[in-house]
Image (cartoon, rainbow, N blue to C red; front, top):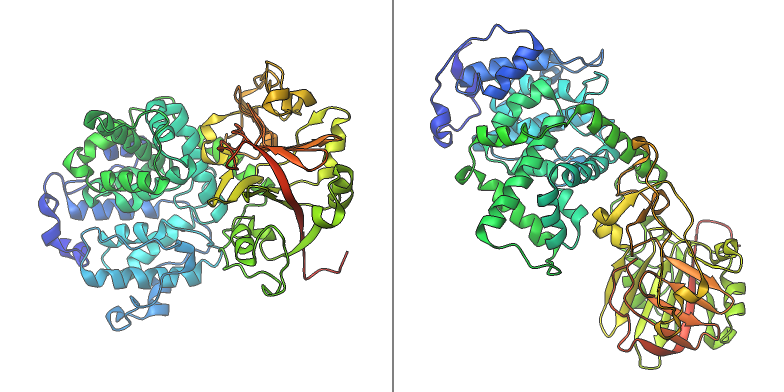
Amino acid sequence: MAEEDYGCFVDWTQMGDMAKSSGTSKLDVKDHVELKKLARQGYWSKNHKLRAQVYQQLIKAIPCRTVTPDAEVYRDLMGDDTGKKALSSTPLPDFVDGSAVPHYCLMADAVTAVHRVIFCLEGQFPDISHCPALPAMTALLLHFSANEAQCFEHVSRLLACNEPGQRFVDQTFLAYESSFMTFGNLANKYCPAAHKLIVATAQDVVAVYSDWQRWVLGDLPFSHVARVLDVFLVEGYKVLYRVALALLKFYRKQKAGDGTQQSEGQKQDSVGVKAEIQAFVKAIGSYITPDKLLEKAFSIRLFSRKEITLLQLTNEKSLQQKGITVKQKRRTVQLALNPDTFSSEVVSAKEMKDIWSWIPERFALCEPQLLFTTSTHGCSLNRFYAHVEGYEPTLLLIRTCESDVCGAFLSTDWEERKRGGNKLSFFGTGECFIFRLKPDMERYEWVVIRHPELASTIKAQSSEVPAEDEAPPDKQNSDGNRLPMERPAADPSDRLSPFLSARHFHLNSRNTSMFMAGNFDSIIVGGGEGNALYIDSELNHGHTARCTTFDNPPLCSTESFQVALLEVWGFKDTMASDR
């Protein structure tokens, strides 16, 4: 087959030195170990035609499901005269999650071809629910394909791979979410200096790492991502992790060289950090050659497919336990009530809508149900418990005599406090968060959501603290909130991901899962070196301070305050029968 057949979608004017084929034009190697060695060396990277032929050979060797769509299926569905059926105006499927088609030195019309191929893939793989990498992978393979049908077959084989322990493309939201959790684990272990930089500069480490696949499949220049593809088709998914870790290392090195590392405690919005990394990766050709990138990637030692698989499975299991298996589109929240008749003495209907936009998706369409208010039920902690027990979750709203407004979303039934006996025992989950509405609006989530590196994963154990340890500062003993001594897991398999739910781990010293607590003389939200909210037994006086659970500032203009009104709202399922 003529060389130009493999370049019919290529804009050769953008290819630079890659447009010049050199080196060997033939490869007869079948042995996997030898192929792995040659791929890393770039044996076929200098000859466009040979590269395309090797890709075809490697992809045809992938073990696939018995019924895997091939080129003939594509021709039957789309017709031979593919140029007459332009689908570039057809939106890409929702499962690509807004990922655009990278140009990868393709002609403008090739974007239409990518749309067509993905359109056909959507119909042939109805089980795909989340696959942001598909546009980039399709565009890459189209670059080295003789026609659309061949590209379709190649992508289909990657999607249909059924070799145990091997995969090429994430196809579900569960796999995608667990992949960047796994990347966070690997970055912490194998790139500690770079990981520390991200922790020091980004407000949300998880948000930064959620882009790790896009760094490789989307942001890398074509010359670099083509070298990654050389090795990826031989060694599989772990190559993406290695390359992304190498990019993180180079990013950190550049920041250190520029002297632009931020001082401790000075953080910027995660969107800004993500944009910086993206810009660095897109311009990496000015700093790092493709071979240097791979050299760095494969210099990471003691890094195995087995470790990645175990981490991935662990993270998937944790997500399943939390009920996170599919991506939920956040709907525009419409309260299940008429704003004109909504009645709260603490917040307006507009403010309640703002709060509702923060709560977990599965409760967002429930109707707010007033359970307790001091203006009606009086200032009694006993009556508070009597009205709110049996409801889960609940929303606590407070207006102070200074007109500050703050509160908390509390994930667990207040009846759980009884398990602690006479001790003030903390309970709740990482879904809890605190917020303030006035003087300004701000939400503070569990610190581990933003900084999972603060966690050390050990087997679940209760966190009980004597009641006097969680009183306001003027009533605390000199030790403050002392945590149970951390006990390391006996077996490495017990060390789960730091991205897991609260019951799987405790935070390191001076940080813990102190979400909510209550006894006969107070209720508390947030613990560790202080309390985000402390309300006394008369529901009259309160205190707010920074706590390590939510890493929040005081929620009111003064740390000690007098409660003007306190309300507790429940979540009523309008589709269910009345309680």
